[in-house]
Length: 267
Ligand SMILES: NC(=O)c1ccc[n+]([C@@H]2O[C@H](COP(=O)([O-])OP(=O)(O)OC[C@H]3O[C@@H](n4cnc5c(N)ncnc54)[C@H](OP(=O)(O)O)[C@@H]3O)[C@@H](O)[C@H]2O)c1
Image (tube, rainbow, N blue to C red):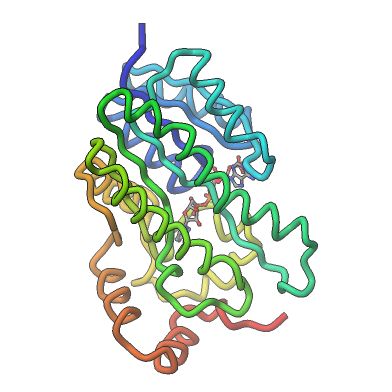
């Protein structure tokens, strides 16, 4: 029976989440994959089990629905899966200007990138405590350190919230053997930019600032398993984050307009 060592990954059907799943499969973790696209998850689960002798299960769920985190948790409980590693990765961006979105658009966004992360973490922590420890990964972004972007007023602030939440988990649960790692990638080749309607802006980002999802996932998994509190993958972005933390906002805005053209487009 597969009763031990499951990793639950949200947003596992594409991009960084999928590469995290593949990386963990290679390390012998059993997996629970979740995202909305069920058929895609099914074929990915098959692809992963064909290559690794692990157990992979999946649950299709829309994290913008209030009850989704509890349904995912109940699914794991009913199957007796012991989740030692929770990867909160699902996310997207909103291209439409803030004043043109609906309240529901913004609520869903906060739920997928924020509330569901808090809820899933809350639901799985008691079992981790019972089992003597666990690891949590929250896929945040370099945007959490940057000045908020004009086209996505909530994206950076929610990621900042996630970093701080991750810090809180560390402070409160490290003595119980639980660590939380906030992973802050920069531009990564995934389905994100197409899904968020900003692929054109992504194509204008200088190539030296764009990395593969596989590379980001590897650094993210290594840091999480090592119990690091913060992971900024690649030297390029470590340097950028150092600057973001130390240069005045006025200078950063000028640099940001050059390096991330999409951030200040008007529409
Ligand atoms: N790509 C970048 O440049 C970049 C940079 C920094 C941070 N990030 C962060 O990295 C994380 C992963 O994004 P990615 O770049 O890998 O993008 P991606 O390829 O578009 O993957 C996003 C994943 O989230 C899932 N998802 C989206 N909305 C969902 C919902 N309502 N309910 C459940 N699942 C949902 C998608 O699955 P379904 O569509 O099947 O539901 C997909 O598996 C995000 O948190 C993003 O903010 C990305």
